[in-house]
Image (cartoon, rainbow, N blue to C red; front, side, top):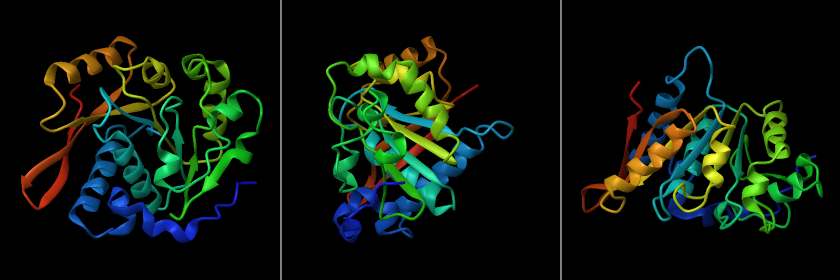
Amino acid sequence: MLRRNKRRSRSAGSGNRLITHANPTSPISKAYRTLRTNIQFTSIDNQNRVIMVTSSQAGDGKTTTISNLAVAYAQDGKKVLLIDCDLRKPSLHHLFHLSNRVGVSSVVSGQKEWNEAIHPTFVDRLSVLTSGPIPPNPSEIAGSNKMRDLIKELLNHFDYLFIDTPPLLVVPDGIIISSYCDGVVLVVRAEKTKQQTALKAKNSLDYVKSKILGVVINDKKRDPNNYYYEYYGAEE
């Protein structure tokens, strides 16, 4: 059975980072729904059901982006699992006010079954599989057959899987995990992420033949009172 979330009442504590839940009619929430639609149209015949969201470096907003995107899919009536595969510096459990005593590392190492580690959240139809305790060998776990098998098994129980990973240019974990995914969304931060850095991340994904669905430009300001993102689909 899914682990019961004893902190549902703390949903208000998610603050502005989960804007799609806190204020679903805001312009930013509408932008996330547009992002959802754009991703759905990137592949009509074969659905992109396993989607990784990552960045080239820390601080670009990948965790906020993937969390709001997962909420947008759940609001569309889909059964969604958000997975924290940042086994070095996890953060999804903080964002959703969850325990991180068990998670991905616990399941892959054989200490727990997957259905003992998944948490329901305060968002209907959205569940979270946290990272679990930080292991001594994150890259080995990411590249293991058990990780690949776990993702395949979870696809039998959820409509969509969203995977958060470490930044691509920091450690190899994200590049490894991208090979298990149907597509990757790359997040860059306006006026922070250098073009050369973003291109290096893109080239890393191209090298392992990962499908890049598009790029989210995060934290771009139209005026001092307006925060939003832009999305650019990947070119063929």
